Length: 77
Image (tube, rainbow, N blue to C red; front, top):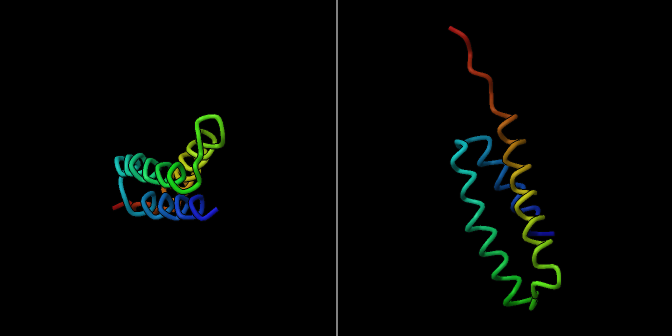
């Protein structure tokens, strides 16, 4: 649950203040979280490793999209 919350908050802040290319930051972050899960929790391919990876990526991407929607509109001049 901590990983989902942290990815959502990271995605929200990157989407709000960053550009679209900052979405690629999630790849090494999720890879590190998956490596941690394999090493500490001994997750294998048959267990929840793939589901965990997809959940972490999707949660971060939805947070990024929500952050992009929260950007202020540019004023017309």
